[in-house]
Each structure stands twice: as C-alpha cells, then as structure tokens.
Image (cartoon, rainbow, N blue to C red; front, side, top):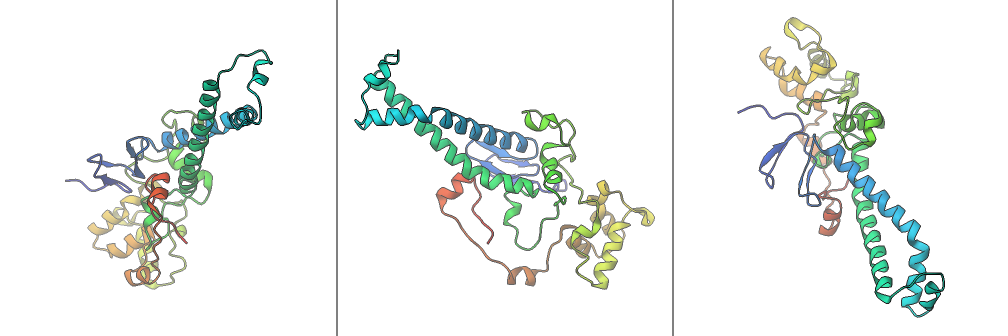
Amino acid sequence: RAPRPERAHHCVLCGTCVLRMDHHCPWINNCVGFHNHKFFLLLGTYAWLASLIALSTAMPELIRLLAVVAGLQSIESFQSEGGFLHMWDVYASLLFGIFALLIGLLLTSLLSTHVPLAFRNMTTIEDFYENMPNPFEQGSRRGNLEQVFGRLGLDWFLPVQPWNPVADGVSYPPPQDLGAFGVGSCGSPRDAEALRLLEHAGPGGVPLQPGQLALAPALLHEQGADVERTWRLRYKVRAFDESQASKEEHVTPFLSQFWACGRGHERP
C-alpha cells in the first residue's frame, strides 16, 4: 500500500487509479487525467473550431441546397454554373451540414464546462466539493492553465506533452503566497500557530520551499503537531458544521451530464 497522490482517484470503469483525475469521458472511452488533460482540451477546441469553420464556409451553399429541397430553387441553377448535381449530392451535403452543426453544439456544451474549470485549475471531481474553496488556485488564468499545459510556450498549441511541466502529477504546490490558503481571514490563534508550523514544517523548524509544502502534513505528524488543523489550512477545508449549513445541490438532467462529459453538478 502507498499514500494516494494529491488529486488522484480510482476509476471503476478503467479499473485503475488516475493522477489528477478529471472524469471518465465516454467520447474517448478513457479517463481524462494528468497525462492527457491537455490533449482532451486541445481535441475539443480544435474539433469545435473545425466544425465552426466548416459551417461558416459552407453556409451559403447549404442555404441554396436547402432551397432546392424545399422547392424554392431549381437544381438546374447549380448545373448552369458548370457543375452537374444530382439530388443525392444535395442530400449528402445537407447531411454534412447537420453533422457539423450537431458536433459544434455538443462541443460548445462540453467546452463551456471544462474550459472554465481549467481557468480555475479545478477538475470536474473537485467542482463537487462544497466544504472548501479551491486550494490549487494560482491567482491567474495563465498560472492555472500552466498546471495543465506547462509553462507558456509554443507547445501549448501542439498535441505533445508539455515541454516545461510545473507539476509531477503526485503533489501540487500551493501558490507561493501562504496567505492564499485562506487562513488570513480566520484570525484564530490556533490557525496562526498552525500556519506557522506549516511554514516551518521541515526538520528542526527549517522553512519548507513552495514545492515541498505538500509534504508538510506528514512532517508535522512526525513532530506531533495538530495535523488535522494544518491539513484544513493547507486545503482550505471548512469545518463540518459550516460546510453542512452552506451545502446546496443542483442536479442537471442526464443528457446535460452526457454533453458535459460526466459533470452532473452546477454551482449556483
């Protein structure tokens, strides 16, 4: 047995644990996680752009073909322009237009869910959490996207692994500013002490580097500190009674869940 990495979850459909698991996607019949989240977003974005370009460039001809089917225009008008068109050509072209429209609508729904989550550095699973704000928020959209795409560069737009990744998939350091944990508003002496311990969780009270902060709870446990409180500060988890008082659930219809690739919860 080994400790579960941060943000990792077990997928019952794939039968394996997935690093920074986002969801199991029926469209690709695979889990979306640390190693392929970038490819998932690029696939959806480029397919959406392809359907948009296809529809916009073919729209004038599709309107004319629709007029032919409706009997508002003669098919000979196409043949007089130098081409020879059969009715099955008309139906095939209209079928292409319908297919491109459906793909565009489905991908619009999908991207409207997953792109905002990527902007906030959240997974679909983490969006269900009610008792805590996002502990992995980096303070900017670029910083949040870098958690998925790596450091900003040309590779952001290419279907390749990030050239300069900022995480290893096992631990995710919080923002450089420890005040971003949300402890500054607590004002409790115990919280202040826990924050001090969190900042100096190394052996002998040595300050930890930002990349080592994920190890703080384990180190504090060895020192006999209040691990639960420091854990709550690290991940900004509210107390149980507070989270229960503010809990609200909104369930979307099944078709909306399928379009959103498994996300069945929306925040108010």
